[in-house]
Structures are given as C-alpha cells and as structure tokens.
Image 1 (cartoon, one colour):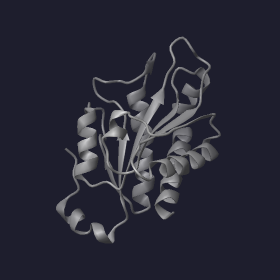
Image 2 (cartoon, helix red, strand yellow):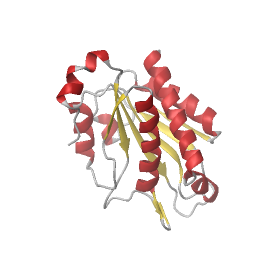
Image 3 (cartoon, helix red, strand yellow):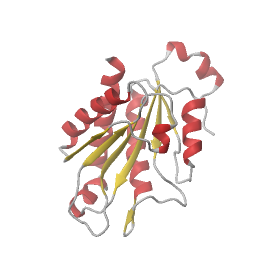
Length: 193
C-alpha cells in the first residue's frame, strides 16, 4: 500500500494539496486492447507524465500504481482514503468492438461535492490542449473508484484504442504529453478556484 511518509504528513499543512493519480488496470488486468496495444500501458505512460508535471509544480502526488502491477479497485480507493487525498483522477482508454472510427474523450465525475467542477476544469483544458473530439461529461457516476472515494474525483477516458487514427495518437509521446498538460492545467485551475 502506497502511503505518504510520516515526515510528509507532518509537513502537509505547509504543502500544496495531495493528488491521487490512478492509472487504470495493470498486471494481469490489461483493460481494453487492440493487437499489441494494451490500455494498461497507455494509462501508465500518460499518468507518469502527469505525475511529473504536478510534482514539478510542488503538488504531493500519490500513484495507485507506478509499474505494471494489478491493483484491485478496493485498494485504489484505500490508497486515496488513507493518504487523505484532496482529489482523485483516474486515467483510462475507451474501446468499441468492431468499430475502428469512433473516437474522442469523455469524462465521468463522482457524486462527491466539487467533482463536477473538477471534471469541467479538466475537460476545458484537455480539449483545448489536444483538439480531441468531445464525447462529453457524465455526472454522478457510480463507477467503483468514483463511488467509493470521498474527495472530488473523476475518471477520464482519454481516447479510443479501437480507433485507427486515435490509437496512433495515444501511442505518440508528444500527444500523451498534451493530455497530461491538459489534465494538469485543469487540476490547477480547480484547486485555485
């Protein structure tokens, strides 16, 4: 279980908020896939870039996983709760069977107070940075990690692995960086609002 050190906890009052980043799937749970492209790998690549940006801005960041390992949903929630995260962001990829053209990003917000605002700030920045097709915001989601965390939380589907064009983008490091920058900007705007 990933936890802040006691020293970090003692200094929390002097530090910026604690952000929990959740790269979806991992290990024996690949998520969606297309050929040799696994959702779990794309999720982790984007989330590591996001972590680097946020740490560079002075935020405390806890990753629910930082390598290719399986972390069950309950443990992801536990990590967020036990570290008293100020917000929770889960990164995923989408897929549609027998459909290689549908693309775009969508975001789900939890029922927790502040989640809709968090999702909207991230959404605006993310779409502006990437130019991706807007698949919308779904509010009050009952997805497990959103339904069981008590801080503002959202889950972002950053694209469709099954889309020929979008899959190529999602594997591109520059595009992954744009996604990470968009999410980071949205998080910062939310925390400063």
